[in-house]
Length: 430
Image 1 (cartoon, rainbow, N blue to C red):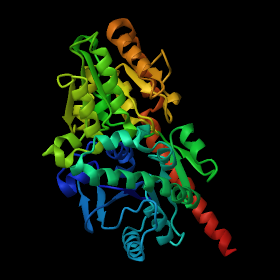
Image 2: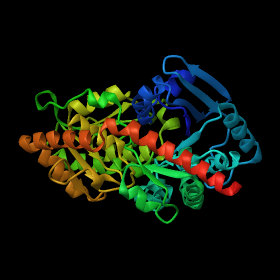
Image 3: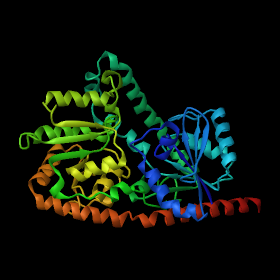
Image 4: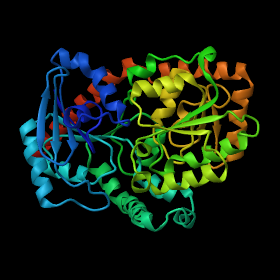
């Protein structure tokens, strides 16, 4: 079986091969490959990974036995692509000649171009990453736009306009996302919440857990080795959707009880200098809060971290906070729980399907800062509660998203869709 994956950017091993870069997001790509590797080694499956880039280039990685490709097309969102891009897709698909194509995500309209480029001869499926229509329901993470604009300044006005453009594109893309789901031969997901979002568009659902990298299996939270009163959170400096501002407000309140409190915020944005050129509108907003609340010594922007560094930071943190107002899988929360870091999460997306309040995590409404403060304090002040959350969370993730389920479920889904497409074509002939 020849499988072709498509991602919106070079991530994981592709980023290293093409750009010699470590990309913080997208660890699930390499993690999923690792689960499929026995099938690749046995010759049951071959894999080509295509990423949108600034040129057309192909590399065969002898170490992984995977073909990596860049394709120079537009990342259209909220509008259709052009005829030239469709021809590029058609050419690359013919060169690879896959038995099935899987899109990692439905957030861009090039998925429709790809389906049309196959002339409906090759099954095309989607592994759901984000849900654009839900993003559109929470523009700017529910922060009033006027409040963000006040933190802009003249030099950042173009960035503010770009943020408004992104909000509009999310809204416009919703109808294209629905069309893409309807046209796809299957939708792969790992939670019921995602299924509910697209139940009106299709009934061709397949279940396969989203893979978690080995780095998070190899680290284990140990109370005796943590940095007391330290918090770790999601990489969210680029987008208000991630809710980092609410954690910063919580830290401001908790500083009265814990003057040494530290919040570690990972992410690539703060690694770039000069800051006035590269900081997003949201980072500027957070920095205003930090200065206003006197938190300069309590907030640490780590810069981008490798998966191993993320796991290590989780292992050494007193608690992990997932504060997003929109999530689908919440991979960072799953990773933290797997490591065993006591976790607090906003109730969004599929979180309720693996996080159980007061048993393996604490749950709160994402804009309820007082509850967030309360649960952080509970973990900081009650060591036995922290240890219980740690033990229960690691057990839950290892069982719920067992690595052993990934390869068989994906392989079975691919086979079902390939057979379904063949039956469809035979019926058309008859």
